[in-house]
Image (cartoon, each protein chain N blue to C red):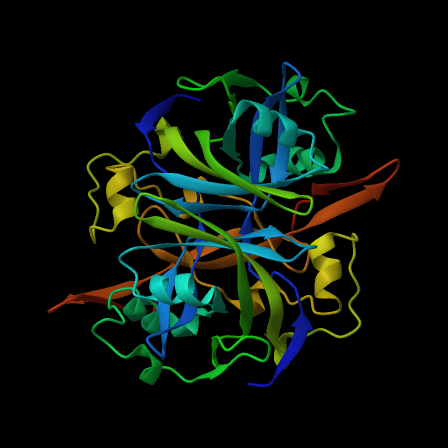
Amino acid sequence: MNKRRLGPVPLLYPVSIVLVGATVDGRANFATIGDCAIMGIRPALVAVSLSDGHFTTRGVRERREFSINLPTTAQLALVDHFGRVSGREVDKSRLVAWRPGDVLPVPLIDDCPANLECRVLQDGTVQHRHFFVAEVVEAHLSEDLILEGRASRTGNALGKAAGSTLPDLRALDPILYSLDERYYSVGRPIETACTEGDRLECRPVESSP
Amino acid sequence: MNKRRLGPVPLLYPVSIVLVGATVDGRANFATIGDCAIMGIRPALVAVSLSDGHFTTRGVRERREFSINLPTTAQLALVDHFGRVSGREVDKSRLVAWRPGDVLPVPLIDDCPANLECRVLQDGTVQHRHFFVAEVVEAHLSEDLILEGRASRTGNALGKAAGSTLPDLRALDPILYSLDERYYSVGRPIETACTEGDRLECRPVESSP
C-alpha cells in the first residue's frame, strides 16, 4: 500500500460528537466536542479536551466538574449550532431543556439519551488546549434503551459495567464526524462467530445480503 | 424521557478501535485499544490510555513514543486476536507486516490505511490506568484514499489540516465497538444544507431513500 506523509495531523476517525456541559458565571453552557474518549472502565474514566476559545473551559477549570451529553442524530441541528456559537454571545441554557445532575450540579440535557456526571482528577495544558481526565461519578441512560436480562456475552469489562443495559448502537444513534467534514450515522453490526478454546476468539462471518 | 442511573460507567459510544504500537524489550508489539481520541488539531494532539495489564505500556512509558494504526473492518480477526493475547505470550511482531516510522522508530502496520507517529508530551496515572497525551509528529494515509483537489468546505480546522485528503468515512472503513460488545461498521453520511449569514449554519436534509 503506497502512503503519503501528511505531516502532523491527528488522523483519528470517526469522532463521536458530544455536548460537554458546565456552569460558567453561574449559567449552564454547552460545547460541541469530538475530543472525548473513555480512558478506563474500572475506575470509570474519561478524557476531554477544550481550548481557550471555548467559553465552557473556564467553568470546567474553576469547578473541576462537567457533564457529557450524548446526542442522537435527531439533535444534529442543535449540536451543529452549539458548535458554531459561543456562550459568550448566546445563552445556551435557554436553548435546550436541562436539569442538574444527581451527584454533581452539572447540566444534563433532557433529550440526550445518555448523560455522564464527571469530576476532574487530573488536567494539563498544551499551548491553548486543556485536557481533563475525569472520573465518571454517575451515568444516566434512557429507560427505553435498556434491554433487561441481556447479560454480558463475553465478559468484556464495559459490557459487565453496563450491566443488563446493552443497547444496540443503532438505537443509541450517535452522531459521528470525520475528516471529510461530514456527519455520519452508525452502520450495521459486524457479526462474529466466537469459539472458546484456551481463549475466546471471534472472527467475522459473512452476513446474508 | 425516563432515565436510569447506572452508577460510575464510562458511557461513551461508539469507540473507534485502533492498534497502538510500541517497542517493548527490543520487539514491536501492538495493543488493541478503544481508549483513544483527538485532543487537538493545531497542535496535533492525541490521548490514549493503557493499563498495567498491557504489555505495550512499559514500552510507551520507557521510550515516550508510540504508533497508532487504524485498521479496516477487513482486519477485524487480527484486531480481535490482538485484543485477546498479550505480547508477553505471543510475538505479535511476527503476526503482522510492519515497518518503522519515518520520524520516530515506532512500528507502523502496512495494511492499516492510516498510521500516526506519536511522541508523548504529558502522562498520568489513575490506579492501574496510564494515560498519555502525545503530539502527532507524522501521519501517513493510503494514496488510494486521497481525493486530490477537494478543498475544505467549511474551513473546519481538521479538514484544513488534512488538506486535500478528505476521504469518505466509508472508504476509511474503521472498526467501531460499542456497549453491547459488538463491532460495527460506519453508516451513511448525514446530508446537511448549510446557509451562510452572519454565521455558517448547517441543518440535516431529508435524503431520498
